[in-house]
Length: 195
Image (cartoon, rainbow, N blue to C red; front, side, top):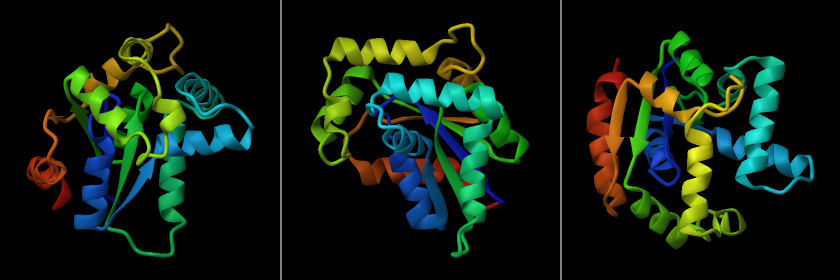
């Protein structure tokens, strides 16, 4: 199984890369964040970043640091349609990057300037179906990001800086041309996709 783990800052373009892999290379794209959103709804909790962080940490404590990647892999294996690979976004704990590597996969870090990302999210919040979740000031956006970038001392919580350090490839997405970014990502990922 080919597996590519996508990580990076909020609004950087991880899903854009995942959709490119799905459309051009027959990968199944699984959003771990959407999986956590569904769990929050199932629990009748607010769908907000703090709640998603709590649920993911709980699952890691119960089932291991790579549990979210394992859940995506199980979903992939249960599909009736044959896929050529699995793209998983958003890795936010180093145990998830470890698990992708254990499965023979690669980890890609996607980033962009914070103001570019914030503006992108505000423009697209209704399209993304996250209007309530994304409705925040730039200062709150940055505060949320800082809470996710560094370890709290509990290995089950988010530590995106550590995931970034484990990445095999880094992509920068400061533009607004989605197709051009997908083409750039495709070229950068070619060695991993066609193995």
